Image (tube, rainbow, N blue to C red):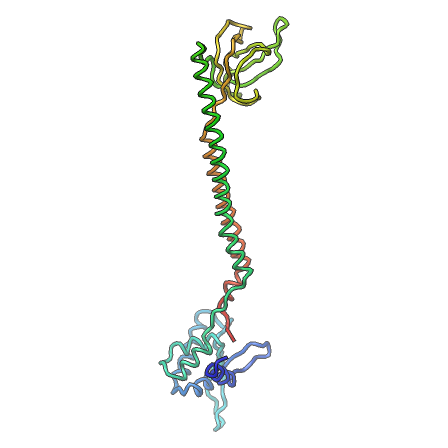
Length: 291
C-alpha cells in the first residue's frame, strides 16, 4: 500500500470504534477534530440524524445520537456515525487536504464482481445469440430442401400437362390403401378437411403406375394429376393417375423460425431474471470497501 494511503488509513483507524456486534462507527466530535473542523461536521451529523428519523424512524440508522461528557462535567450532544454517514458528510465539506484524505478513506471503492458471475452473465448473453444463429442456419437449410422439393413438384406438374393430363383434385388425403371393389384393390383419397364435410373421393387401382416425389403417406395433402374414368362407386371417382404432388410451403418454416427465435429470447429473459434475483446481493455488494 502507498505510504500516503497507509497514513490516511492509520489516521482514521485510530478513531474507529467497534460495537459488540462487530459493526464499526466513528464519533462525530473526534472526526471533526481530525478534520480540523470548526463545527460543520457536528451540524451536518445533526441534520442527518433528524432527516433519518423523519424518513425511517429509528431503524437502520447511519447516525445515532449520543451524549459526550465534557471536561467540566457537563454533557454535550454528539453522534455515532457509520462509514456511510461519514462518507456523506465528508463529501459535502469544503475540499482541503484533511477532507481529501477522509474522502479517500470513507468513500466506498468499487470491487469487481466475481468471475463466476461474469461468466454467467456472458453465458446468458451468448446463449440466445448462438441458439438463434443455429436456428436460422437449420431453418435456412430446411427451406432450401423445401425449395428443391417444390422445384421437383413443378417439374411433375409440367410433365403431366405435356402428357395431356390435368389436375383432377386438390387438397386430397389418403383414406384407404385397401378398398376392394369387384376383386380389385384400390387406393382411395378423400377431398376436404376432417373438420368439415368431406367431398367426393378419388380412387385408382393399387397396382397403378404413377409418379410421386416421396412415399405415399397419410395426413399429407396431395394434388392428383390424371384422367377421370367415371364413377367407381356413388361417392368415389375412378382415376387414371399420372402423378401425385405434395406442395411444400415456406410459410410454416418462417413460423417455426419466429417460434424458435421467440423461445430463445424468452428463455434468455427468464434465465437472466432468475440470475439477477439470485445474485441481487452481488449487485448490491459490488461497491464495497477496498481495505
